[in-house]
Amino acid sequence: MIKSGRMNKKWPIFLTFFFLIVTAFASPKKYNVLFIISDDLTSTALSCYGNMVCKTPNIDAISARGTRFTRAYCQATYCGPSRASFMSGYYPHATGLLGYKSPRPRIGNRSTWSQYFKNNGYHSARVSKIYHMGVPGGIEQGGNGADDAASWTERFNSPGPEWKASGKGETLESNPDGKRPVVGGNTFVVVEAEGDDLVHSDGKTAAKACELLAKYAKQEKPFFLGVGFVRPHVPFVAPEKYYPPFLPYSKMKLPRKIEGDWDDIPKPGINYKTSVNMKMDVRRQKKAVGGYYASVSFMDAQVGKVMAALKKTGLEDETIVIFTSDHGYHLGEHDFWAKVSLLDESSQVPLIIKVPGKKPSVCHSLTELLDLYPTVSALCGLPAQSRLQGKDISKMLDDSNSTVRTAAFSVAPMRNGFLLREDEWAYIQYGENGGKGIELYNIKRDPHQYTNLAQNPVHRKTLDRFKSQMASKLQNIRNNDLKGY
Ligand SMILES: [Ca+2]
Image (cartoon, rainbow, N blue to C red; front, top):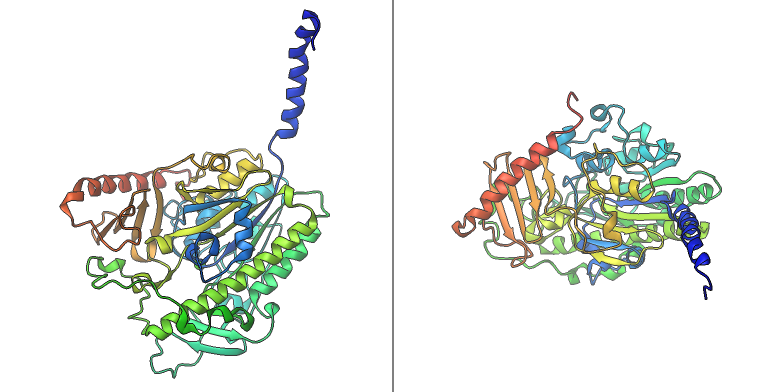
């Protein structure tokens, strides 16, 4: 009980001191950052995103303690431009990086994501594929791919045998008579491999990441550690112990096939890999799904090793963990396979962000991989940079209803395709003016994107709105500080 008015007058001074002390301790901490990225992973293959067949307990465990984003989109639907984009902080059409090159020549001395942390007192490292690396060729060779040396204090590659791993292999693609041997390249191949996890690139990546975490735990400096797994990118190669849940392959379920599904899709919207041009019958399609799932399970087990190592260091409460993929993947929807397409299965990505002390949640707000750089910078108390084209979504980690945009944007440079994805609509155009075809889907009524409404006069207004919105989005993207590059 406060007895006199005099005491009362001292309270504001006391409270000010108290406030100063609290804010000193509450100011953004120099969290460590553990960034884990899978390659060609569709969210639909993860059990935390609802898959009932492919179990991913380790990724689910991160999700159970973090924020799981259900509407995160990549900025380009294949490796090279997607990775160059979120690492550089620019959309592909800002840098002109639409292929498989390092962003460095286009960004000059501007800091990439991990480099910004490095320049702010972090030890920055990567294990395996963060920027583009060719899979399987580049992984077989164990080189740096389209990496950027300035982004890292140290870097490690994880060479692996890929399709050459010994075991039971089959080439599913363009092999109707079964005479084609197991091959390399961007080809659908399944190998039930002999030996343990450490035979393979991702096994080695996990082991190196675990070793580095133990080492960094003894250092003064905070760390930014990028861990890149190459599965489930083709070839679908995993130790045989990961296959039993998906055997026999004949029990795998394929997505519903709709009569005349392709009739309303413009030519560039028919994906570059289909059941037809890959000459995959139903048996091969089911094996492709099972082989993909086995690769996902294998990758998930490696994530588990890294997370266990983080726990062992005692740094879990000081470390932000991010799990994502460079883009999504088709597993037979519309008889499409693999990436490039701008439909949800290919353009949407799994994204989980776990920040110590924040409550677990599920966030349906539209986000982009481009948001990672500014968001994680903000969470770690690094100064904001107005040149970055992504947005700080850190508010969504406290309030899952908060939003930063009404539309996510992605591109498929291989098809000159552009996507604007809103809550209710997906608008896709081919060519900068849509001259090569347009797709318009009402996601609320048609979540699997079966009915293209672009030719339907009822939706003329919506179509016109999207056309002009796309033009101004592209104009905004190109209006940046990189002019002259
Ligand atoms: Ca990829």
